[in-house]
Image (cartoon, rainbow, N blue to C red; front, side, top):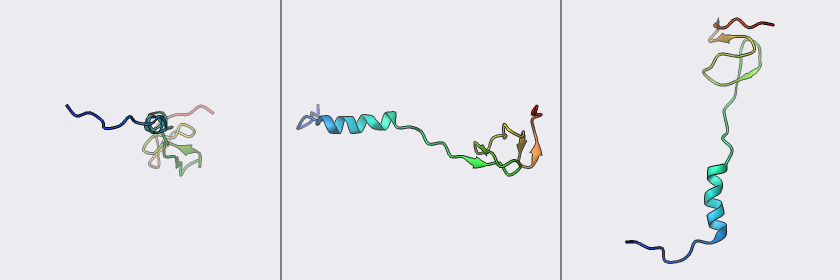
Length: 60
């Protein structure tokens, strides 16, 4: 079995674990109909439009 030659330092251990807890960056797009930020390839929750067509009826 392969064994490590030296002990991994505490700072290297913390740097490795920090990748797990890094916040996930979500790309945001701007709705061409209302201008509100929305997730890409999803229906806008503010106006209900997707790809120039109204998909949802949004109560205002």
